[in-house]
Amino acid sequence: MASLIEEEERRRGRNMRPGFTRPWEPAMSAGDPRDIDALRAQRAEVDAMLGFRYAEDAHQKARAWWRLVQARRARSAIQVTELPPLPAPPPGALTFAQKILARFGRFRPERATVPPYLR
Amino acid sequence: MSTPSFPGTRLRRNRTDAWTRRLTAENVLSTGDLIWPIFIMDGENTISAVPSMPGVSRVTLDRLVGHVEHAAKLGIPALALFPMTPPSLKDAEGTEAKNPENLICRAARLLKREFPDFGLVGDVALDPYTDHGHDGVIRGDYVANDDTLEILQIQSVIQAEAGIDIIAPSDMMDGRVARIRAALDAKGLIHTRIMSYAAKYASAFYGPFRDAVGSGKALRGDKKTYQMDPANSDEALREVAMDIAEGADMVMVKPGMPYLDIIRRVHDTFKVPTFAYQVSGEYAMIAGAADRGWIDRERAMMESLLAFKRAGCAGVLTYFAVEAAEVLRRG
Image (cartoon, rainbow over all chains, first blue to last red; front, side, top):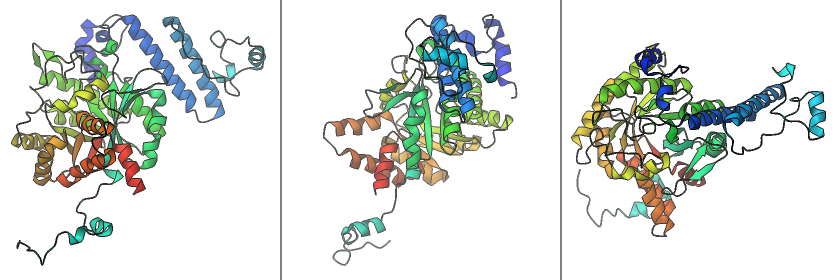
């Protein structure tokens, strides 16, 4: 029983598409792969958003915000439609330099790097 | 029992005042009897109405906590989760059911973190995930029992690992409770309960639910080769007996109101916690008639729920759960 999923993977292995590691992946190819990739990216962003919303302290919240930014970055690469705006960075999420850029409206989270203390 | 006779006996005496009616009530409905079924879907920041179920909505995960907060405050003990799977993730084998990142599992993790005291009921069946809308995999032109069981085992384990407290197999495959129990136990999930949809009838009352989860249009054919014939009553007892023998902790009769006789027989015969699912069609009948002003929504709702208690139910899955809990709180 410990390996039900593994057994399933082995059993269906011959049908699996290269690069996929779970038994549900090849069957999902029944749909348009772009739709599925977009859906996964959206799910990842929603999870990141929930992580951000329910983070317990300021440090966790700042880290969660950057995870959200990264999820948005990945999603933007797949989905060309307009996406809802991200929440503003919480206190402690930006470095001094990033804060200055933000003050002048020049800060672009999708291009910025995560501050070392939040990695 | 001797037959009481008039005028020495006047049964109306005990109905004279509200307080005697309360004092002599044989059955009482409480908030602790209610399980609230909710629909979850992919997307962001959306609560969308289900047209055929006035007052019922589908919610995205980022709105889920807010959506159920009120139910938690009202003291509703448990939620039953049903996913609306995007068409791109549906296939003939229902493989999204085995994805630990599917909607149900993600919702369970979120709800357990935010509301650890809420009981979570997870629907186990393949119909939300198959492109043909059936509860199992199809081999030839038949819904294949034993091949489906393997998938249900995995589905149950991943749901329980995500935080689902009660696995509720609704598929009506033979032998599924035993296989699910074995799979859960092998993973050490010995406290995960099983509420089997033991007597689930091939009913016309499920239509609005299928709209809500998006499986109605997809369904090819009907489910009469695995769900029960509405003509049968003894067969329901055999179904329940098998599920109890296989390890079901609670059993369910579905639909509810048209099958109160079955609930009564199950309760009297087995003395196990017996639940009813007041299904979408039952809900839609009351809500639809009330919307047109033909019946009093609140009174019809409370009367229908009390009927389940009178028939012997330990509890009811009902879309009215929040509304009923509000009425009960008001007193």
